[in-house]
Length: 533
Image (cartoon, rainbow, N blue to C red; front, side):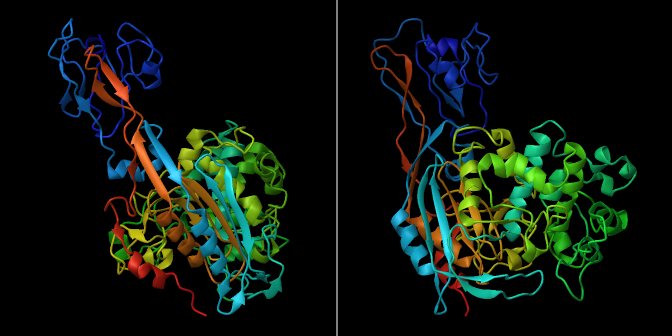
């Protein structure tokens, strides 16, 4: 019988779902159960004839060979904890099933109002996907954009009419996740290298140096420990950028001369900025967020792939497979080219092309046609925290980000533990409203966002009003949407046979800030995201 043939080791979880029945059908293996005497299944389950099922202190007891006439139905429902509700990226592994009802009407209504800024009609474009990556909304509003606007060159741009979802504009920090995708598809997925491979493996001349310990993961998560060069042109421009923007200079030579030296390290490679360091910053500032080390990836990628330039790499591994024909490193307003790309902020694209990135993520690495661009494992790598629950940008720079927070709204601006719960590979991790968010923002260029197993969004804009308006849309949208979760099955005892059986658990509604898991700062949020004319 089932209780005699199966048992489950305690894994410390209070929310893992079980499917168990008295027969030996394939449902056992689908739910990770191992039948005694069988070689299939998982190591977490073992043959145990004495203890019966035991899960988190719940012992269903040893069942006798013949069901007792006095057997009464016993329901053992496993309640979904707030933490497991919030961490929607792990629902599948925890046998949880989600249900979404997206408030697209609220999204559209708020988007329509967004373009009305300070008496002008600024352009915004948005695309929304459901939990399966199906497009459920796409719209552009407004008409104005600041053509040529550049924070690099201090150019305010020219107010121009004609904005739509196909308008080409610089992505700025939305380029960071593309750097992760480009590296992984060209080097990791092809077997040419790996994320934790030290620089000295590819360039042996760095074998006995501290910078030789720098890895691609560190470059993509702001943990190289290198100095923070000023990327702006004019007085104060860092020597690295002066060099790389000189047509007579070699890109690799500039990196090796003005960045890849031990003397430019302000922290040890891989080190995380601690609260103690924030009180006495080792590099004179209290941030680790650093654009320049992303360029180190160029040396590694070109060396390993033997391709000519990053434009060729981008087309071969990312933009051609995704059908993103206007996406390029040749982006004049940020002084980026395919030969000398600014990997952290140098891409140009369109709103509707970039929407294919969060769509791919919410589909766990698959393109719209179902073929694979990234393995599920590498999607998880991009979304894995590398800052122990903190963030390379402290609150003064990170902004509000979400109306649900780990701390009250008046948190210390020098603290880096406010609205974020981590930073992945070119990926910010705010708390979200009804579940985790994986995203990145940019002062110009909009933002992308994935709420795993719930929805995905891309916003595009090219104006100087920042991303706060888009965050406001997301806050109102997620609060108005309904998200529910349930266990795939919970255990009951059959009243007639006495056998253990499973049945779907009831759906539980996820509340804003996830049942008090985070502090609700919504009352002060609207004023925090307002735009000053």
